[in-house]
Length: 590
Image (cartoon, helix red, strand yellow):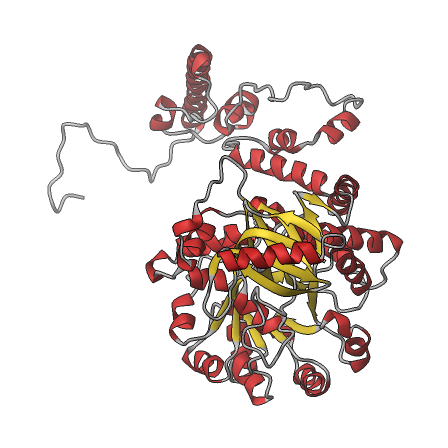
């Protein structure tokens, strides 16, 4: 038995009442409520008198109480890889090698003790962090195709007491769903280009017998979406609709490439949409058509996804990005509370108002601390709409001081009562180091930096040997230092004067030259301006003078040889008579 006195309560009931209330809790439910009027205070005094010995009385005069948050898409397996995942993109096929290695480790089918321990640490850390952030209901998404992650999820869920629905590519047999029914397993489909008709038939069979919810992360990559249309001559939404898989229990995650027909099917079949603002911010540059979904009256909820850490910060990011839509704070707050709860965690299917603080409702409560000087709130004149504005504008996960699930405190006065946080932090740090070591993070990071630095270097005019010196790593340098031919110890190579091909032929092969070069070439010998050092211009001029002297020697030698040949030739009687230069011939002369 617990008595929560004089709290500011956001009821989320049919009338959206807000005010000061006292709550009487018995076991897991709220058994009575009393307002701040004189009649209500008399009722509270009667509770205390009746249950003085058995009840725990908690002063909540400086706290706001509201139903807890609902995270409709949590991906714990990426909780330690946020900064690595930011390098990814919906439209790119090439992924980051480090994250690929880590996910191959996390999703291996033959899981040993090491991976089981790491999975348990990941889920315990993720669930406890969500609990401290005011989240009591969550959909846990995984890409695993086996059941090796279900036992760690079960253990973490039992520790925190949260309501969890596991969404993953379930193997097509009903035993898996039956054995883990308490986790409310749901089929999660991504990469529609790998789907076959056999897979869709198996999903249909599961849905007809055991499966309830289906989550589709499709139409996020244009190439894959177009390829699916070419293979099946229709969109993935149209194909699923033909098999009866699109209904009010079907949810699409960040659908970017839907046509008019797809939107009409989603509207007519009352399907739902989950929006992960931070994923959309990093994974794509395409505008998300949220106005189309709102205009068609499609239910939507906001979630953290891969990259989000604080659901209220993601909610604020979504509001600021689509500010032109003028979405009310009440509607935004409903997208992380009432709407996802009614879609995925409604314990009273026949009731339209199961998510509220009222008599005979479950005692699932989130407490916001108002004692901090930096977070002051004077709600006496506030309406329900005004309180929603205040929460959306100012609240973060750090403002939740207490969490109660089924009438039991799980977090009280900013201290977890279900786990030792210092031990948990030590475990998750060990798991993080193991994952980064498995993904060869340090090694790949060094190679990436070396590649980036080499790309900035100007290799114009460098020889292959010089380029090789720049690309050598420290390990290669250590191995080659002992070789006799390795002489350069500095990072920057030493350069020497280069000889052009024209100069080398004059100095080294002048004895074999038999062709007289033109006067133009002799006056302007070939120079490589890219290689010539401005400081050594004197050396180049001497080379030019020396080249001219050699040219003159060669020409004189050749002219002397020609004169000797003319002198040695015998006189031919048929040869023509040479006339004097001043004699002119007329036409007709022989």
